[in-house]
View 1 (cartoon, rainbow over the protein chains, first blue to last red):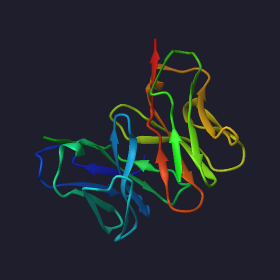
View 2 (cartoon, chains in turn blue, purple):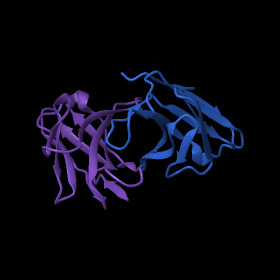
View 3 (cartoon, rainbow over the protein chains, first blue to last red):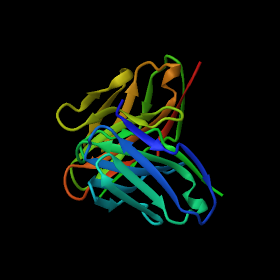
View 4 (cartoon, rainbow over the protein chains, first blue to last red):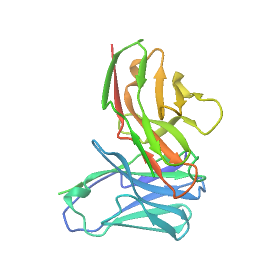
Length: 113
Length: 114
């Protein structure tokens, strides 16, 4: 299994509070991704990174920011959490671009009250 | 731009019966195609992928898929399912050129019945 960990695994927070989710990899893969999974929507890309300090927006990036200061860590921040951000968040990594397999972390369940 | 459609949100099937999970895509460029599986409370893992060459792709756990360019489809099949195949299956498409897009379908929940 690819070495990907996510923390925390579960979180309950209140509307309006900031939340940071962490993804850590031990594979030295260049590309890292944050997805959210919601019933009826499958997986939707929030942000991705193609190198240290190189990030770009996905299809559902509003309300989220990311940072990657080291190859192994990719942080997702909800600046002011809303109930619509209640979801399961997955981090993924890949060695290369579009033809490459993505390897997924175990997910973080976030509940915003 | 690419898009992917999984028409069946749920597929119940009896153990040892064959199953086909459907995936159709649209794209203005050539594509790579993937099937991922998600077991309960886990992340996704790759079942198989089509990059080029033979249109019949074999994956793990006895699954296979066939790329049909004229039908823009990439259906997943297994001749005999087991209880342990109960999971959610996601089709994904990625373009071979142009702006990065790796698009997942909405998933098909396979329920294998004893």
